[in-house]
Amino acid sequence: MTGDDPTDHESDDGLAMAATVNASISNIADRDGRLDLSSVAEHLRDEQSDSGSLQGLVVALQYMLIADSESEDRQLHGPFGPFFEGVLESGEPFQHPQGLGEVSSEVLEVWRLCALEEVHPVVRARLADLLWEVRNGTDPHEWAFLAIDSYVSAADVDWDDKVELRDGVFRALELCRLLNQPERENPAVEALADMAERSLGSRSQEPGLVVPILEELARRVEPAVEQFVVEALDVYGGDPWVMESLLEVHAQLQPPDERDAIWEQQVAGYLAHAELAAGMRKYSLLQKAAELASSKGLTDTHHQIATRIEAIDWDEMGYGTAQAETEIDGEAIEEWVSFIVGDDDLESALGRFGSDIPTGDIDENRAIVERLAHENPLQRLMPWRIMGDYNSVVWEVSDAESHQEFDLYRHEQQRVAFFAHLFGLQVLQRVVSRYSISADDLAGLFVTQFIEAPVAERIARSFELWQQGDPDSAVSVLAPRLERAIRHACHLGGLRVTKQADMKRGLPGGVLGLGVLLSSLEGRLGESERRYLRGALVEVTSLNLRNRVAHGQIDRATDADYVVLFHIACWLRLLRARADRWRPPVVVLDRL
Image (cartoon, rainbow, N blue to C red; front, top):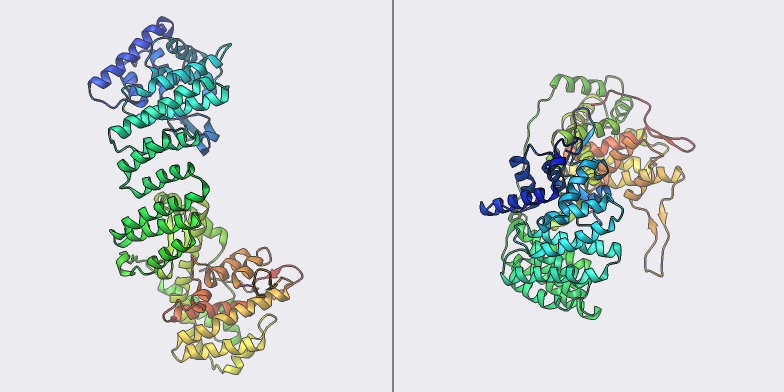
């Protein structure tokens, strides 16, 4: 409608339009339909499609009031946003209704004529507010005053969408503040209190309606709010999430030294429900209680709950295993393995093995991940929690940025796993069969600018252990030596590798952790290569081999674990340094 000029609005006056709107509302109520602005708009559109003026009213009722003045949508659209948004085939963004700045003068006149008549107060409030937002007329503030009064008078009408009425009163209070109308605030506050009282008195399960009202009343320190909280706890107290919100309102009204006891009540609500639950529900309730206790500074309570979470049996959580199958080109694998092993000498074979990284190019990986996300959008709608030992949450994935990073590391991890199981293991097995390998010779091949002789000797020893069928011991020997080699490389590259003691805080000095070192290599090492090292060694959302080995989190390391670590050793032996930037291996192979 906002893009078309009505052809017959001149023949409709405001009184007739108001009568039609009121009749539509009565018809919806008589048919036991749901009364809200959207249903009124739909009824007017369907029943009066030949009236251009009424279609102008339909547009007004289809805007969405964005009550939260701090929300992202409010910052984008202002108080009134579109009913829906999308993208046209041309790629241009589309929204309906269009922005208020694009509404034609003819439609604004329709809104003006109807708002001046005895139309239903919910509709009148909407029309007046829209006219205020576009600053219609010579005295636009009069529209704001009419909107405030109409929102307040609509608060107790027979209307199914009570939240719509409540948000209207919230909007009235916002307009009062904007226009410095304290005399109009009191009736609005009284309307909110009456709304809460009616809902609680009927014991209707409407916490989504009532709790925000109590929060607003608490901000204003209204005397009635304490009794409302008591009544609301009686009505909604069986839900720990609602109880938390209500007790938070109660805490705002108490002296600071009395709030800890209230916060303990909040936590106790979740704990009581956790006692009756099992599996993931029990875990989620305890986790919520722990997070709440931590946020409120209830340290002892938090520690007690964390211990209970750790005690939940893994099997009780109900986790399952997902499996998938994919076809692999066996001939391609054989061709690649044969090329890497070669038929020349051990040093050349190790050079070819370490010259490429299994994760591939970061830009190509990002493109793949984003394509998969586009094809499977539901995967990024839900938050993820990465679980560790003793049911600990080691990482949370919730917003778009964290989803992108998590998906990228997961894709890289899958590539490393394919490499280790299908390619790398075969390479090492054939290298052992093809070449004569002594510990001393192998150690000598690993002594480089960054790998010291004692580290090279331990690398060779790890290979011996792996040959003897003991990958667990081999991994235990190799993992910490890779950390030492990387630290030494950082040192030679001019990066800081230690931290100073802070005795005032009781903190000892020492070497920086591997995660910190790998972060410091950003910009000095190719990003694809740096991410490979980080994901394989220290990234909690990926393989994290160094940390899992060092902290005893692996029951028994596998051949595949060793293949990854030995590949990193082979990659490191090819690394060279120059003045201010590191150079990755010079041998380039086709990516896997």
